[in-house]
Picture 1: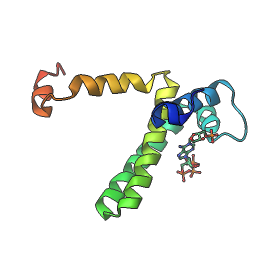
Picture 2: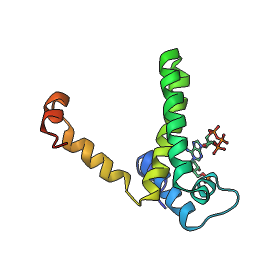
Picture 3: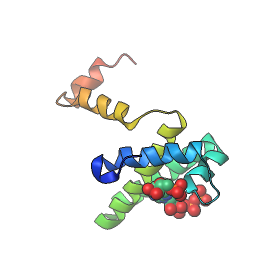
Picture 4: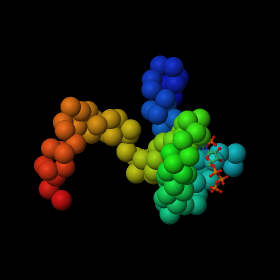
Length: 110
Ligand SMILES: N=c1c2ncn([C@@H]3O[C@H](COP(=O)(O)OP(=O)(O)OP(=O)(O)O)[C@@H](O)[C@H]3O)c2ncn1[C@@H]1O[C@H](COP(=O)(O)O)[C@@H](O)[C@H]1O
């Protein structure tokens, strides 16, 4: 496992998440989420997204940062469930980089 200072923090957390999935322990929150299953993970994402929206409405910057961190973390747990490396999301964002959002929307097949 690489040190977070050697790689980006999302990738570093993803590596820990994968390790917890493969080597579950009772002390691990990530392992407890995987033990509860996909619906629990999806529920947490919905909850954290809602809390992010509420924080966004409230406008407290520290609160927004805190809630977005919770949301990012739970999204990483979802990616881990499907063994999707964060790099794949980064690649998709890179592909979109510099492309107008409206143009990109028009080019979507569905
Ligand atoms: N980044 C995080 C992280 N962010 C948030 N959380 C946890 O996510 C939970 C969400 O908060 P809630 O108040 O909604 O939790 P809750 O009500 O106890 O949860 P539920 O009963 O609803 O599941 C809290 O328990 C937080 O501690 C995190 N837990 C772990 N990580 C990272 O994952 C790594 C592995 O964690 P463990 O698996 O616990 O070792 C850690 O070293 C961290 O790097």
